[in-house]
Length: 180
Image (cartoon, rainbow, N blue to C red; front, side, top):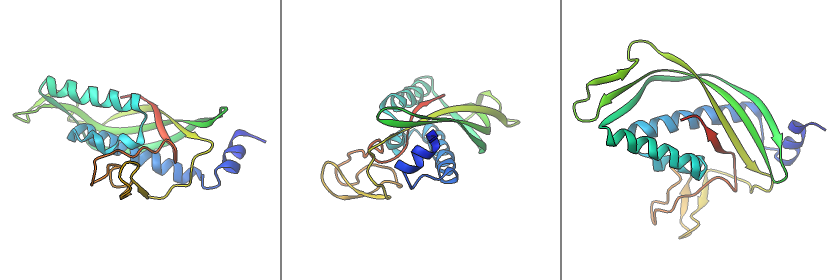
């Protein structure tokens, strides 16, 4: 039996088209969070290491009084390049091809600083997703691990009552490696 068959056997909910759609959606949300500085909205999609790198990038941009924009961002393609089975998890590596006007503006004046604001740049982005083999079933509404309130994970993964962040690592695929 191949790795994909083992994955589907252990995760009957897995469907390649659904997974690709998830990858596209999370990639766009991550880029948007970097532009707006609202990184807490994507914390539940990524590992702590990736989240800290994203926050550091946003903080560096703030310290340099700039904002990186991704105008006309779209995902051109998502290709699964490998599926691996490890002792306690599965990993899926993808190559995501995106296109956008990528440039910096001054945080105060909103004037162009550098980058390409005239034509869209095509980029290949490598992302690695991991899902635990014993992951619990997941739907969009969960209970907050801290206070027990209902949370809509698809909204932002943050409890509106106590502020705790819900992470997907025990339930779904999370990004554990990504070019930022």
